[in-house]
Image 1: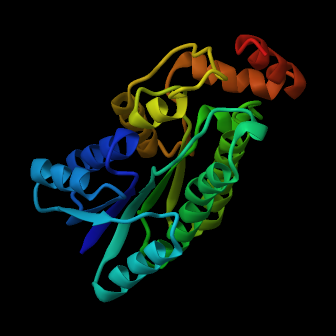
Image 2 (image 1 turned 180 degrees about the vertical axis):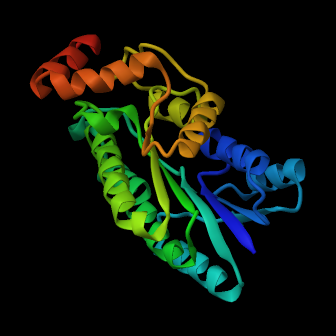
Length: 253
């Protein structure tokens, strides 16, 4: 039995990836993971019995252990894993609480690595891994320093892992979107006065559609939108200090 696993599946990009995988692939089951079990049950009602809701908090080591036990108890092959869970706080480093910073690192980095390591023994040739990075994966971002650093980690990890797994026929893609209209974004900017400039927004469904299209083309990094691609190109050309200076001026810092 071939299954897919999607984290952060209760809303936003994670939820849209569940719908995208359901319509584009014939997995026997899609395990959907998030803290809000009621949201996962709603997805199951809409998409049917192939959806297997698993309500877990991935910042807890015990949650990774539970997934490991579930995999070991079933005769499955994992055809895909989408690491879409994430957490962001947009404020100055000194204004962030230690709990906020540690939660970002735990969810965006540690749990992603731990889950991927747990699932890999069940993946075979033709399987794929999709990790959710960000436009901020490509550059240091003042006033989003921890979030941007975690996403830079995700991109670096994804590219390196893709090389390591190539001989096994397992493909790794990192999705690096710009600003997206999701609950994640709403939470990140709620009561926020630090980040004041947002150049444009994208729909999460369009990000997922582009990611799945790039997956077929074996593109290791998926970026939606010409402005975002140009920004990534400029980051590679211009001095980092200049890029950060432009960002700070946009945010009136």
